Image 1 (cartoon, rainbow, N blue to C red):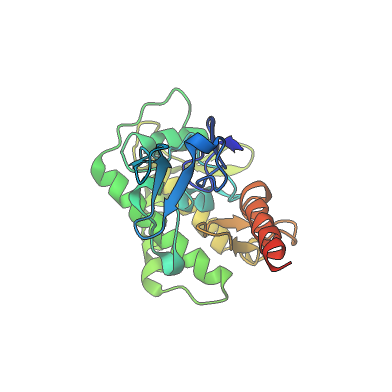
Image 2 (cartoon, one colour):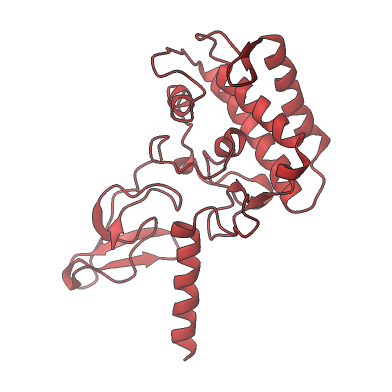
Length: 253
């Protein structure tokens, strides 16, 4: 048993008698057993009394500090700040690491798009614009990873933000020439992500390496730079798939 993770791709935080990211099927103690109510998708702890069970507190919300960075480029890590279902549909809000304006600059600092001592005042409007860009990025690169053509509307959404980002930037020489925005411009994270997305779209080699993780309840995007990578994380989704196969073999045997 390992620590409790908020979503399959969060980092476990403490030991609680559950497996990382999902309810424990085997209890740590018989008097503290757990059951999963499939009809309501809620986890219950048996109290030891007949026919009495108490609901566990809801899982803590995912945060930008615990979210795994596995995309390989900023735009894919940005798309992975929420979990996805098929066809670019977002999973429930508790999987969203960017549910509040203050979380956007925190994510930017973590991935190096914002200096640690910079202060950005992100509004709810800017957060909404960033999340719309995130959805377009996910749908575009998920479609490409599946060998499909992304919609023109999603490509246009990335392109519009890119054009605005270039217009608001200056070219600076820092280990090559890069776009730079004023330190206090709250749009700089969204602009940098759009530039990252266009850079990836303009690189045929890297674009051919974009993958969608097939892990259960995942759907994250990543660059397969080795040519042999299947999972966003072998330690998370890959390990879980192995455990499921092992369990299936034992049941059939």
